[in-house]
Image 1 (spheres, rainbow, N blue to C red):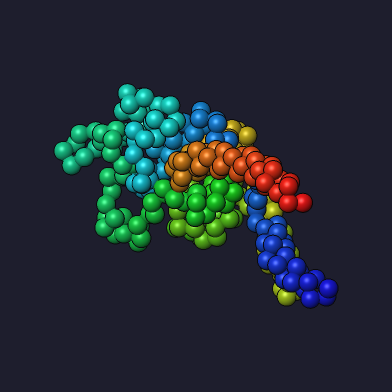
Image 2 (spheres, rainbow, N blue to C red):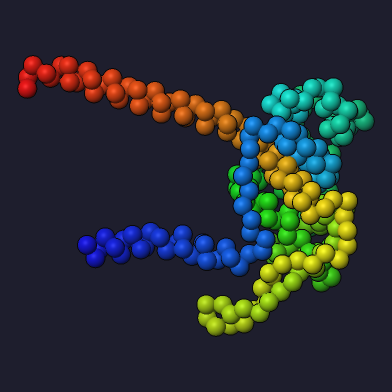
Amino acid sequence: MKKSVWIVAGLLLPVLGWAAGGGAIYPNDDIDIDWDDKASMQRGAALFVNYCMGCHSAEYMRYNRMGQDLGISDELLRENLIFTTNQYGEQTKVGEQMKITMNKEYAETAFGTAPPDLTLIARSRGTHWLYNYLRGFYVDETRPFGVNNSVFPNVGMPHVLLDLEGLKKAVTETHKDAEGNEKEVIVGFEKIGEGSMSEAEYDQAVKDLVSFLDYVGEPIKQKRKNIGVGVLIFLFIFLILAIMLKKEYWKDVH
């Protein structure tokens, strides 16, 4: 019995440690992606091409595949979501990948490192992390771009959504860590410059963007889940039929 208790406790320790550590991160709000809300993903796509695709690609996604899945016609894609051109100055075709014009060599020279492709960022980081990261920028004059991030300290990326959210500074408190050492912990933000959106509107915009990135990371996710549910229902029905058939075969034996 004691051995079983220790095994259970050992399995729970990582979970408890994550929960305890999560409280030190601000913001740390939950997000629920609604895959039936295509309008949200459409708004997220617009935010992505307008604010993110200056530096980041989503090269494993094609414009027309995105349009088919999210209900955006090829004409609307050309007019509102495709801003890149080829080497001849012609607009990128709808069947091409969502790549940026800037090549990796130039990016490495300009920024020191090439900005990562964001196709799989929602799968690697998680939607919860992305949602809080994009809401965690604050003023920090010691950083190269004048901002830092409470979720990703010493981030090397500018706050690209600054004109939407506006400026804010971090509110900190002194806390003691597990070893008794004092450290400054961010517990909130104070607005010092207005953006074009209210706080609620900005949170929704970030959710739209994260919803789009979640879709891009695995476009077939909803279909996969639906197939999985169908398979489980089939197996459950098959189990009932198998039990009934077993009883029918063995009724004379017993």
